[in-house]
Length: 336
Image (cartoon, rainbow, N blue to C red; front, side):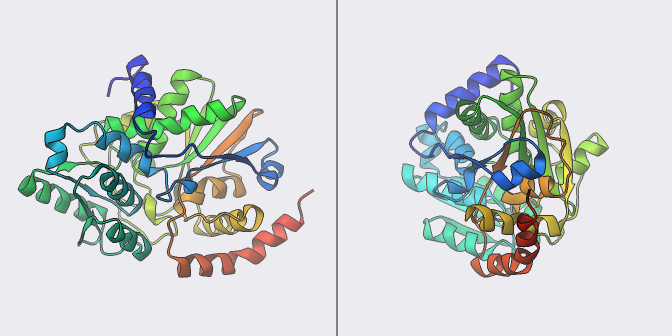
């Protein structure tokens, strides 16, 4: 992926292509988080996309770039759930066959939603890396086009369109906090934001266990990291030993990487419900968790937090909110 002006043009081009498949999501002010941070905090609600997450942007950007003969052979992907949902939804809209490979532990609510969208679901393997291997085996057998979850220029450009919306909606934004996994979302936003205004700070947030991009950046090269049980299951999986794009983009453009605890993630999910009546999965709430744990230095300009998704098993969500709500309500009661 060419950096500089060509990359920014790619984001603008993606914005035009994906218009039929995505919505411009709201940027909502959060009084309790603003009080905690000491600067105005705004929530970029990608959780309100029709598929329940930001992933529809990258999927639409990549699939709409396929030539007609490639579309005729169908598309295939590997996913922790949200990307698979996005590929299935966009493929259905366009009339393209889709196959989604997932690991055995993938959230049941996500796998059922993928099936309902008409995609073929292939379940197998202990983790995301095994799902990726199966995806490429099937692609070799069928000729289907692989739509990567993150390490693809068109996917990165699609996620970068969120940055354009944030600046359109609130030009005063000085810091953007974003969930970090394979780097498609954080990399796309960071690339676009830094090329438009280098003064804007970008902070990537991961959970403490299994944070592959965080560990890779610390090591100076992509490393394999064992997956661990976490509320932020959508952030699991490696970045690929042969990572071509997102690792370099995150290292160059993301200003800081932080890790958050499971307790903070649960508190963040409960706070979004209590203060905003918003449902967020754990991965979608890690930016809020970083604010609650004091992991972010806000600076003196407004701060935007990307709430990336809401696709969580309802029973699991209710258990988390029930457990963490008393602590959150006590915290809200102590607001100045």
